Length: 212
Image: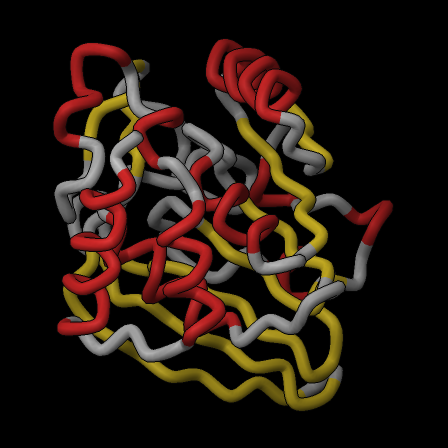
């Protein structure tokens, strides 16, 4: 089901300079429609963000692909995801052979996605809680991916990133952010690349935005 639509989406991603074959392969395999609410299913393979309830969205496929490509993971790497949401980003990483640890702050979304993962046989470690303070128990991580916009880079997440690891995080205001790709060169040195004009829901938590 939807095989042709998935292949068309992969072609769109290629045109937008997604070149990592492992990322493209994951997008051709993972069925995005399974992560999209019923009324929106017919839009599943359009390159747009879609609402999933509770003022949250499933990110635009290009954004998911861009962030995943920027992580530069290898099979077996440990990746911490902040903001499980629909579970689509985690499913893409799992399809690439990555070990996924993911935190969601909305309890209803967390339960819904946990049930979906159980049903689909997707093996990720999911946790309900404040993602801005990370998940110290399983640190350090080879990659950290933050799927909500933060006012600044959470210090605890940097601490939980392995040396040589990469964090991809949107930083800026509540409406528009700059994507930062941070490489941890050593415990004291970070290298940061910046790509402007991304839009995410706000990252709420101790080291993020306060609830309005």
